[in-house]
Image (cartoon, rainbow, N blue to C red; front, side, top):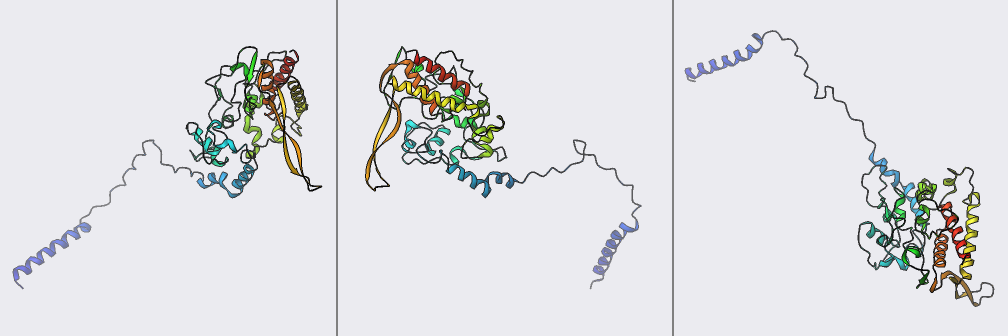
Length: 368
């Protein structure tokens, strides 16, 4: 090898050795430890956040097999799920919008105009419950909870009001459980009123009107009418009595009554239902005698189980108004009678209001 190249390589190697050796041979003693850095902007050490609740647990409050199956079973036995009240011929008619089918109510809750439905189905879980919004335990996800519009409220007001507001979840019920028709004195004038249909009267199930004390025919009399929304049961509202511990059959429970009425063993507390039923029967007799209502009899053929013969029998189809022109007082009396009868609570929803309506109505009819 060339001597020059050899010397050059030796020089370079010596330089590398000196550089690396210098790190240890010429390094001074270790200096003092530096100060700690400053804390964060808030002046405190960071703290781990608290673990949140298991999201699956929140879902299982409703969606466990046991809980969901129970609610589905209860709802299947309810009037909202079965029978003509749930769907029937009315379910597809735009005129019956929005209460008699799943499709109509969902359309209404989403702001769609009334329209006919060709294949309506009965109510189901998703009729009242829409998609979740917060996924928290309190997220009941009801489609409607704001104050409910009074049907035909653009045409008439009830004591100046166009909305029912029984607060929160019970407002969902108020969308359907109302008269839909104004009492005769608000849509007619003068001393007489013409009934043009055997279906005239408040729509079946005007429970909200009775509960809050708005919309029945308040005929003047000696018994004072309570203020709207003043009934204690209006504060408890629908879900307070009809959904004891989340019961989706919507059957009222005596246990709910007992929380306010100590010792209650049935709904006839203090004999109220017995008293109201007697007043309704009394008013019915007077209206029938005045020619305002009549019982419709339907002739049908049935199998006689004892003889095996086909026989013709007469069945009552209930009482209906007589088409024609009647005294305004009598038509208002009919409106109250059928509305309170189909409220089905026999006064429980609003005792003072119901008693005032019936006592003043009966007195007015007697005075004719």
